Length: 458
Image (cartoon, rainbow, N blue to C red; front, side):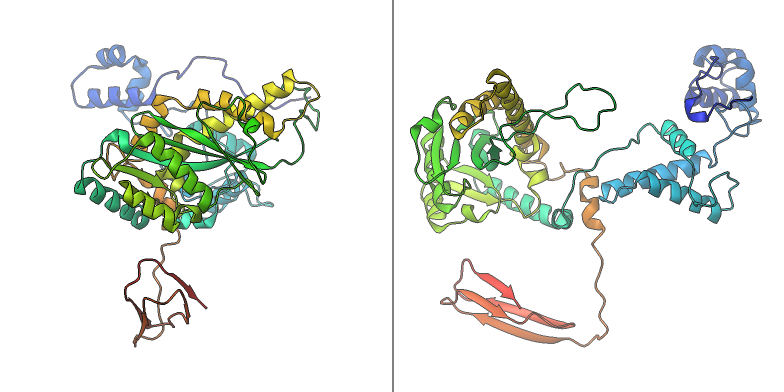
Protein backbone atom coordinates (compact mmCIF):
# COMPACT_ATOMS: atom_id res chain seq x y z
CA UNK A 1 0.00 0.00 0.00
CA UNK A 2 1.35 3.43 -0.96
CA UNK A 3 0.62 6.56 1.10
CA UNK A 4 0.98 9.96 -0.55
CA UNK A 5 1.82 12.87 1.75
CA UNK A 6 -0.14 16.02 0.88
CA UNK A 7 1.68 19.28 0.26
CA UNK A 8 0.07 21.04 3.20
CA UNK A 9 1.48 18.47 5.65
CA UNK A 10 4.92 18.15 4.07
CA UNK A 11 7.96 19.18 6.12
CA UNK A 12 11.32 19.87 4.54
CA UNK A 13 14.02 17.34 5.30
CA UNK A 14 17.06 19.27 4.02
CA UNK A 15 18.44 22.79 4.22
CA UNK A 16 18.79 23.16 0.46
CA UNK A 17 17.76 26.52 -1.02
CA UNK A 18 17.73 27.94 2.49
CA UNK A 19 18.85 31.34 1.25
CA UNK A 20 17.10 34.61 0.62
CA UNK A 21 15.91 35.11 -2.96
CA UNK A 22 16.51 38.88 -2.84
CA UNK A 23 20.13 38.31 -1.78
CA UNK A 24 20.53 35.87 -4.65
CA UNK A 25 19.17 38.43 -7.14
CA UNK A 26 21.52 41.11 -5.81
CA UNK A 27 24.47 38.72 -6.04
CA UNK A 28 23.58 37.74 -9.63
CA UNK A 29 23.24 41.39 -10.63
CA UNK A 30 26.63 42.26 -9.15
CA UNK A 31 28.25 39.45 -11.16
CA UNK A 32 26.52 40.51 -14.40
CA UNK A 33 27.73 44.09 -13.91
CA UNK A 34 31.28 42.90 -13.36
CA UNK A 35 31.46 44.31 -9.84
CA UNK A 36 32.28 40.93 -8.20
CA UNK A 37 33.37 37.51 -9.32
CA UNK A 38 31.24 34.44 -8.69
CA UNK A 39 33.35 33.41 -5.71
CA UNK A 40 33.38 36.93 -4.22
CA UNK A 41 29.63 37.41 -4.68
CA UNK A 42 28.94 33.99 -3.17
CA UNK A 43 30.90 34.90 -0.04
CA UNK A 44 29.56 38.46 0.19
CA UNK A 45 25.87 37.59 -0.11
CA UNK A 46 25.95 34.15 1.56
CA UNK A 47 24.59 32.14 -1.38
CA UNK A 48 25.90 28.91 -3.03
CA UNK A 49 28.34 29.50 -5.90
CA UNK A 50 26.86 26.90 -8.26
CA UNK A 51 23.31 28.17 -7.69
CA UNK A 52 24.49 31.73 -8.22
CA UNK A 53 25.93 30.76 -11.59
CA UNK A 54 22.56 29.34 -12.72
CA UNK A 55 20.79 32.50 -11.61
CA UNK A 56 23.36 34.64 -13.41
CA UNK A 57 22.82 32.75 -16.64
CA UNK A 58 19.01 32.71 -16.07
CA UNK A 59 18.83 28.92 -16.46
CA UNK A 60 15.88 28.60 -14.08
CA UNK A 61 12.19 28.11 -14.81
CA UNK A 62 11.07 29.28 -11.36
CA UNK A 63 13.74 30.98 -9.20
CA UNK A 64 13.71 29.89 -5.57
CA UNK A 65 11.86 26.59 -6.16
CA UNK A 66 13.28 23.08 -5.82
CA UNK A 67 12.04 19.96 -7.57
CA UNK A 68 9.65 19.64 -10.47
CA UNK A 69 6.55 21.08 -8.80
CA UNK A 70 5.69 24.73 -9.53
CA UNK A 71 2.86 27.03 -8.40
CA UNK A 72 -0.03 27.30 -10.84
CA UNK A 73 0.44 31.07 -11.23
CA UNK A 74 3.76 32.87 -11.58
CA UNK A 75 5.07 35.33 -8.99
CA UNK A 76 3.80 38.43 -10.78
CA UNK A 77 0.29 36.98 -11.19
CA UNK A 78 0.08 35.92 -7.54
CA UNK A 79 1.32 39.33 -6.37
CA UNK A 80 -1.50 41.02 -8.28
CA UNK A 81 -3.99 38.57 -6.78
CA UNK A 82 -2.68 39.28 -3.25
CA UNK A 83 -2.92 43.03 -3.88
CA UNK A 84 -6.51 42.58 -5.05
CA UNK A 85 -7.35 40.72 -1.81
CA UNK A 86 -5.92 43.59 0.24
CA UNK A 87 -7.71 46.22 -1.83
CA UNK A 88 -11.08 44.47 -1.40
CA UNK A 89 -10.46 44.23 2.34
CA UNK A 90 -9.75 47.98 2.45
CA UNK A 91 -13.07 48.59 0.69
CA UNK A 92 -14.88 46.42 3.30
CA UNK A 93 -15.70 43.76 0.69
CA UNK A 94 -13.11 41.22 1.80
CA UNK A 95 -12.92 37.85 0.04
CA UNK A 96 -13.69 34.58 1.76
CA UNK A 97 -11.69 31.39 1.22
CA UNK A 98 -14.43 30.15 -1.09
CA UNK A 99 -14.31 33.40 -3.10
CA UNK A 100 -10.55 33.11 -3.48
CA UNK A 101 -10.74 29.48 -4.65
CA UNK A 102 -13.42 30.26 -7.23
CA UNK A 103 -11.52 33.31 -8.46
CA UNK A 104 -8.31 31.30 -8.86
CA UNK A 105 -10.15 28.74 -11.02
CA UNK A 106 -11.76 31.43 -13.16
CA UNK A 107 -8.43 33.21 -13.67
CA UNK A 108 -6.68 30.01 -14.65
CA UNK A 109 -9.41 29.16 -17.17
CA UNK A 110 -9.61 32.64 -18.65
CA UNK A 111 -5.83 32.98 -19.06
CA UNK A 112 -5.34 29.41 -20.34
CA UNK A 113 -3.05 28.53 -17.43
CA UNK A 114 -2.41 24.83 -16.96
CA UNK A 115 -3.83 23.71 -13.62
CA UNK A 116 -5.15 20.73 -11.69
CA UNK A 117 -8.07 22.52 -9.99
CA UNK A 118 -11.44 20.86 -9.40
CA UNK A 119 -13.30 21.21 -12.70
CA UNK A 120 -16.55 19.84 -11.28
CA UNK A 121 -16.81 22.35 -8.43
CA UNK A 122 -14.97 25.03 -10.45
CA UNK A 123 -12.65 26.12 -7.69
CA UNK A 124 -9.03 25.72 -6.62
CA UNK A 125 -8.13 23.15 -4.00
CA UNK A 126 -7.30 23.64 -0.35
CA UNK A 127 -3.65 22.84 -0.96
CA UNK A 128 -3.36 25.75 -3.39
CA UNK A 129 -4.92 28.10 -0.79
CA UNK A 130 -2.51 26.98 1.93
CA UNK A 131 0.41 27.43 -0.43
CA UNK A 132 -0.86 30.88 -1.48
CA UNK A 133 -1.01 32.05 2.15
CA UNK A 134 2.43 30.58 2.80
CA UNK A 135 3.90 32.46 -0.16
CA UNK A 136 2.17 35.69 0.96
CA UNK A 137 2.54 35.89 4.75
CA UNK A 138 1.12 39.43 4.78
CA UNK A 139 -2.32 37.85 4.26
CA UNK A 140 -4.29 36.04 6.95
CA UNK A 141 -7.84 34.85 7.58
CA UNK A 142 -9.62 37.28 9.92
CA UNK A 143 -13.11 37.59 11.38
CA UNK A 144 -14.45 40.98 10.13
CA UNK A 145 -16.24 43.49 12.29
CA UNK A 146 -19.73 44.35 10.97
CA UNK A 147 -19.62 47.87 9.51
CA UNK A 148 -22.77 49.71 8.44
CA UNK A 149 -22.99 51.12 4.94
CA UNK A 150 -23.65 54.54 6.49
CA UNK A 151 -20.21 54.55 8.07
CA UNK A 152 -18.59 53.21 4.92
CA UNK A 153 -20.14 55.89 2.73
CA UNK A 154 -19.97 58.74 5.26
CA UNK A 155 -16.25 58.52 5.91
CA UNK A 156 -14.97 60.21 2.77
CA UNK A 157 -12.33 62.81 1.91
CA UNK A 158 -14.86 65.61 1.52
CA UNK A 159 -16.36 65.15 4.98
CA UNK A 160 -13.01 64.72 6.69
CA UNK A 161 -11.48 67.61 4.75
CA UNK A 162 -14.34 69.89 5.81
CA UNK A 163 -13.71 68.98 9.46
CA UNK A 164 -10.01 69.77 9.15
CA UNK A 165 -10.86 73.08 7.45
CA UNK A 166 -13.01 74.10 10.43
CA UNK A 167 -10.32 72.96 12.86
CA UNK A 168 -7.59 74.87 11.01
CA UNK A 169 -9.74 78.00 10.88
CA UNK A 170 -10.33 77.74 14.63
CA UNK A 171 -6.61 77.45 15.32
CA UNK A 172 -5.82 80.41 13.06
CA UNK A 173 -8.40 82.74 14.62
CA UNK A 174 -6.92 82.49 18.10
CA UNK A 175 -4.25 80.54 19.91
CA UNK A 176 -5.58 77.57 21.87
CA UNK A 177 -3.21 75.90 24.30
CA UNK A 178 -2.93 72.10 23.86
CA UNK A 179 -4.17 71.62 27.43
CA UNK A 180 -7.37 73.42 26.37
CA UNK A 181 -8.22 71.04 23.50
CA UNK A 182 -10.80 68.56 24.83
CA UNK A 183 -12.74 65.60 23.51
CA UNK A 184 -15.90 64.27 25.18
CA UNK A 185 -17.99 61.22 24.41
CA UNK A 186 -20.24 58.61 26.04
CA UNK A 187 -20.02 54.86 26.30
CA UNK A 188 -22.35 52.24 27.74
CA UNK A 189 -21.64 49.92 30.68
CA UNK A 190 -23.71 46.93 31.72
CA UNK A 191 -23.81 44.51 34.64
CA UNK A 192 -23.75 41.60 32.15
CA UNK A 193 -20.12 41.51 31.02
CA UNK A 194 -18.59 39.71 28.04
CA UNK A 195 -16.39 36.82 29.29
CA UNK A 196 -12.92 36.31 27.86
CA UNK A 197 -11.50 33.06 26.49
CA UNK A 198 -11.05 30.13 28.88
CA UNK A 199 -9.19 26.82 28.78
CA UNK A 200 -11.60 23.97 28.05
CA UNK A 201 -11.68 20.35 26.96
CA UNK A 202 -10.87 19.92 23.27
CA UNK A 203 -13.88 18.86 21.21
CA UNK A 204 -16.53 20.12 23.64
CA UNK A 205 -19.20 21.92 21.60
CA UNK A 206 -20.38 24.41 24.23
CA UNK A 207 -18.25 26.14 26.85
CA UNK A 208 -19.82 28.50 29.38
CA UNK A 209 -18.76 30.99 32.03
CA UNK A 210 -20.81 32.62 34.78
CA UNK A 211 -22.15 36.15 34.18
CA UNK A 212 -24.43 38.30 36.29
CA UNK A 213 -27.46 37.71 34.07
CA UNK A 214 -28.66 37.30 30.52
CA UNK A 215 -29.60 40.91 29.88
CA UNK A 216 -28.76 44.01 31.88
CA UNK A 217 -29.64 47.70 31.84
CA UNK A 218 -27.16 50.23 30.51
CA UNK A 219 -25.23 52.72 32.64
CA UNK A 220 -23.77 55.57 30.58
CA UNK A 221 -20.27 56.87 31.32
CA UNK A 222 -19.26 60.33 30.00
CA UNK A 223 -15.50 60.77 29.71
CA UNK A 224 -13.39 63.73 28.57
CA UNK A 225 -9.66 64.16 28.03
CA UNK A 226 -7.35 66.80 26.57
CA UNK A 227 -4.30 66.74 24.29
CA UNK A 228 -1.73 66.92 27.10
CA UNK A 229 -2.88 64.01 29.26
CA UNK A 230 -5.50 65.42 31.65
CA UNK A 231 -8.96 64.01 32.31
CA UNK A 232 -12.19 65.53 33.58
CA UNK A 233 -13.66 63.38 36.39
CA UNK A 234 -16.16 61.05 34.70
CA UNK A 235 -19.94 61.15 34.88
CA UNK A 236 -22.13 58.08 35.42
CA UNK A 237 -25.81 58.09 34.39
CA UNK A 238 -27.83 55.33 36.08
CA UNK A 239 -31.14 53.91 34.76
CA UNK A 240 -33.49 55.12 37.50
CA UNK A 241 -35.82 58.00 38.29
CA UNK A 242 -34.02 59.47 41.30
CA UNK A 243 -30.30 59.56 42.02
CA UNK A 244 -28.96 57.83 45.14
CA UNK A 245 -25.51 58.82 46.41
CA UNK A 246 -24.81 55.20 47.40
CA UNK A 247 -24.61 54.39 43.67
CA UNK A 248 -21.30 56.31 43.54
CA UNK A 249 -19.67 54.34 46.34
CA UNK A 250 -16.21 53.34 45.09
CA UNK A 251 -16.36 55.57 42.00
CA UNK A 252 -13.36 57.66 40.81
CA UNK A 253 -12.90 60.83 42.91
CA UNK A 254 -15.26 63.72 42.10
CA UNK A 255 -17.38 61.59 39.76
CA UNK A 256 -20.71 63.21 38.87
CA UNK A 257 -23.71 60.94 39.35
CA UNK A 258 -26.93 61.47 37.37
CA UNK A 259 -30.10 59.48 36.76
CA UNK A 260 -32.38 59.03 33.77
CA UNK A 261 -35.21 56.62 33.13
CA UNK A 262 -33.41 54.87 30.28
CA UNK A 263 -29.82 55.25 31.48
CA UNK A 264 -28.93 57.21 28.34
CA UNK A 265 -27.84 60.82 28.09
CA UNK A 266 -30.21 63.60 26.97
CA UNK A 267 -29.79 67.33 26.43
CA UNK A 268 -30.65 68.22 30.05
CA UNK A 269 -28.17 65.74 31.50
CA UNK A 270 -25.45 66.76 29.05
CA UNK A 271 -25.92 70.38 30.09
CA UNK A 272 -25.32 69.25 33.68
CA UNK A 273 -22.17 67.50 32.50
CA UNK A 274 -21.06 70.73 30.80
CA UNK A 275 -21.44 72.60 34.09
CA UNK A 276 -19.35 69.84 35.69
CA UNK A 277 -16.78 70.30 32.92
CA UNK A 278 -16.59 74.07 33.54
CA UNK A 279 -15.77 73.51 37.21
CA UNK A 280 -12.48 71.86 36.22
CA UNK A 281 -11.65 73.42 32.83
CA UNK A 282 -12.26 77.02 34.00
CA UNK A 283 -12.56 78.40 30.48
CA UNK A 284 -13.08 82.13 29.94
CA UNK A 285 -13.56 84.42 26.95
CA UNK A 286 -9.91 85.54 27.30
CA UNK A 287 -8.66 81.96 27.71
CA UNK A 288 -10.85 79.87 25.36
CA UNK A 289 -11.14 76.09 25.29
CA UNK A 290 -11.97 73.86 22.32
CA UNK A 291 -14.44 71.02 22.93
CA UNK A 292 -14.71 68.33 20.24
CA UNK A 293 -17.82 66.15 20.34
CA UNK A 294 -20.01 64.05 18.04
CA UNK A 295 -23.28 65.17 16.51
CA UNK A 296 -25.63 63.46 18.99
CA UNK A 297 -28.87 65.37 19.50
CA UNK A 298 -28.10 65.89 23.20
CA UNK A 299 -25.02 67.93 22.24
CA UNK A 300 -26.97 70.55 20.24
CA UNK A 301 -29.37 72.12 22.76
CA UNK A 302 -29.71 75.90 22.81
CA UNK A 303 -28.88 76.24 26.57
CA UNK A 304 -25.63 74.33 25.99
CA UNK A 305 -24.63 76.48 23.00
CA UNK A 306 -25.40 79.73 24.88
CA UNK A 307 -23.48 78.59 27.96
CA UNK A 308 -20.49 77.59 25.84
CA UNK A 309 -20.50 80.95 24.04
CA UNK A 310 -20.68 82.90 27.32
CA UNK A 311 -17.85 80.91 28.92
CA UNK A 312 -15.39 80.90 26.01
CA UNK A 313 -15.84 77.26 24.94
CA UNK A 314 -15.69 76.59 21.19
CA UNK A 315 -17.84 73.61 20.18
CA UNK A 316 -16.78 71.67 17.08
CA UNK A 317 -18.73 68.57 15.96
CA UNK A 318 -17.27 65.62 14.12
CA UNK A 319 -18.96 64.83 10.78
CA UNK A 320 -21.43 61.90 10.84
CA UNK A 321 -19.94 58.39 10.62
CA UNK A 322 -16.36 59.60 11.15
CA UNK A 323 -15.82 59.31 14.91
CA UNK A 324 -14.23 55.84 14.59
CA UNK A 325 -11.22 57.52 12.92
CA UNK A 326 -11.36 61.16 14.05
CA UNK A 327 -12.39 60.98 17.71
CA UNK A 328 -9.47 60.39 20.13
CA UNK A 329 -11.64 58.68 22.75
CA UNK A 330 -12.91 56.14 20.22
CA UNK A 331 -9.46 55.53 18.77
CA UNK A 332 -7.42 54.89 21.93
CA UNK A 333 -9.48 55.06 25.13
CA UNK A 334 -12.84 53.30 25.06
CA UNK A 335 -11.43 50.02 23.73
CA UNK A 336 -9.01 49.49 26.66
CA UNK A 337 -11.62 50.85 29.09
CA UNK A 338 -14.16 48.22 28.02
CA UNK A 339 -11.55 45.46 28.16
CA UNK A 340 -10.49 46.43 31.68
CA UNK A 341 -14.15 46.73 32.69
CA UNK A 342 -14.98 43.19 31.54
CA UNK A 343 -11.89 41.86 33.33
CA UNK A 344 -12.96 43.65 36.53
CA UNK A 345 -16.44 42.13 36.21
CA UNK A 346 -14.92 38.65 35.86
CA UNK A 347 -12.82 39.21 39.00
CA UNK A 348 -15.90 40.40 40.87
CA UNK A 349 -17.86 37.27 39.92
CA UNK A 350 -14.89 35.09 40.86
CA UNK A 351 -14.42 36.60 44.32
CA UNK A 352 -18.14 36.98 45.08
CA UNK A 353 -19.50 33.55 44.22
CA UNK A 354 -23.27 33.48 43.86
CA UNK A 355 -23.66 37.26 43.89
CA UNK A 356 -25.03 39.27 40.99
CA UNK A 357 -23.56 42.57 39.84
CA UNK A 358 -26.02 45.35 40.63
CA UNK A 359 -26.00 49.08 39.91
CA UNK A 360 -24.48 49.60 43.37
CA UNK A 361 -21.42 47.58 42.34
CA UNK A 362 -20.79 49.22 38.95
CA UNK A 363 -19.03 52.30 40.35
CA UNK A 364 -16.39 50.17 42.10
CA UNK A 365 -15.87 48.00 39.02
CA UNK A 366 -15.74 51.04 36.76
CA UNK A 367 -13.16 52.69 39.03
CA UNK A 368 -10.84 49.70 38.63
CA UNK A 369 -11.11 49.89 34.85
CA UNK A 370 -10.91 53.69 34.66
CA UNK A 371 -7.73 53.93 36.72
CA UNK A 372 -6.05 51.39 34.42
CA UNK A 373 -7.23 53.03 31.19
CA UNK A 374 -6.90 56.76 31.99
CA UNK A 375 -3.19 57.19 31.30
CA UNK A 376 -1.29 60.19 29.92
CA UNK A 377 0.04 58.40 26.84
CA UNK A 378 -3.48 57.58 25.60
CA UNK A 379 -4.38 61.27 25.51
CA UNK A 380 -1.26 62.26 23.60
CA UNK A 381 -1.54 59.33 21.20
CA UNK A 382 -5.26 59.84 20.61
CA UNK A 383 -4.98 63.48 19.55
CA UNK A 384 -1.85 62.76 17.52
CA UNK A 385 -3.18 59.77 15.55
CA UNK A 386 -6.30 61.73 14.53
CA UNK A 387 -4.33 64.79 13.36
CA UNK A 388 -6.09 67.12 15.81
CA UNK A 389 -2.95 68.04 17.76
CA UNK A 390 -0.35 68.50 16.44
CA UNK A 391 -2.54 69.56 13.51
CA UNK A 392 -2.06 67.31 10.47
CA UNK A 393 -4.86 67.07 7.92
CA UNK A 394 -3.04 64.20 6.16
CA UNK A 395 -2.84 62.01 9.27
CA UNK A 396 -5.59 59.63 8.11
CA UNK A 397 -4.03 57.03 5.76
CA UNK A 398 -5.43 56.73 2.25
CA UNK A 399 -6.72 53.18 2.68
CA UNK A 400 -9.27 54.37 5.27
CA UNK A 401 -11.12 56.18 2.47
CA UNK A 402 -11.30 53.11 0.23
CA UNK A 403 -14.83 51.98 1.34
CA UNK A 404 -16.36 55.33 0.36
CA UNK A 405 -14.70 55.16 -3.07
CA UNK A 406 -16.86 52.11 -3.86
CA UNK A 407 -19.99 54.27 -3.82
CA UNK A 408 -18.50 57.35 -5.52
CA UNK A 409 -20.29 56.88 -8.85
CA UNK A 410 -21.25 59.86 -10.95
CA UNK A 411 -24.95 60.17 -11.77
CA UNK A 412 -26.12 60.26 -15.38
CA UNK A 413 -29.31 61.86 -16.60
CA UNK A 414 -31.35 61.00 -19.66
CA UNK A 415 -32.29 64.62 -20.31
CA UNK A 416 -29.77 67.44 -20.58
CA UNK A 417 -32.37 70.15 -20.10
CA UNK A 418 -32.54 71.52 -16.54
CA UNK A 419 -35.11 73.64 -14.73
CA UNK A 420 -34.59 75.70 -11.61
CA UNK A 421 -36.88 75.84 -8.58
CA UNK A 422 -36.30 78.22 -5.69
CA UNK A 423 -37.61 77.70 -2.14
CA UNK A 424 -37.53 80.68 0.21
CA UNK A 425 -37.62 80.03 3.96
CA UNK A 426 -38.42 82.92 6.30
CA UNK A 427 -37.30 83.43 9.90
CA UNK A 428 -40.60 82.29 11.42
CA UNK A 429 -40.33 78.88 9.76
CA UNK A 430 -39.64 75.79 11.86
CA UNK A 431 -39.81 72.47 9.95
CA UNK A 432 -40.10 72.74 6.16
CA UNK A 433 -41.48 69.90 4.04
CA UNK A 434 -41.33 70.13 0.23
CA UNK A 435 -40.87 67.90 -2.81
CA UNK A 436 -37.30 66.86 -3.67
CA UNK A 437 -35.78 67.95 -7.00
CA UNK A 438 -36.68 65.88 -10.03
CA UNK A 439 -34.13 64.45 -12.43
CA UNK A 440 -32.31 67.31 -14.14
CA UNK A 441 -33.94 69.93 -11.89
CA UNK A 442 -31.82 72.41 -9.91
CA UNK A 443 -33.11 73.27 -6.44
CA UNK A 444 -32.08 76.53 -4.70
CA UNK A 445 -32.91 76.95 -1.00
CA UNK A 446 -32.80 80.51 0.34
CA UNK A 447 -32.54 80.91 4.13
CA UNK A 448 -33.52 84.30 5.57
CA UNK A 449 -32.42 85.03 9.14
CA UNK A 450 -32.11 81.37 10.18
CA UNK A 451 -29.36 79.76 12.27
CA UNK A 452 -30.65 76.19 12.61
CA UNK A 453 -33.41 74.47 10.70
CA UNK A 454 -34.43 70.92 9.84
CA UNK A 455 -35.40 70.21 6.24
CA UNK A 456 -37.30 67.05 5.28
CA UNK A 457 -37.94 65.74 1.77
CA UNK A 458 -41.04 63.73 0.92
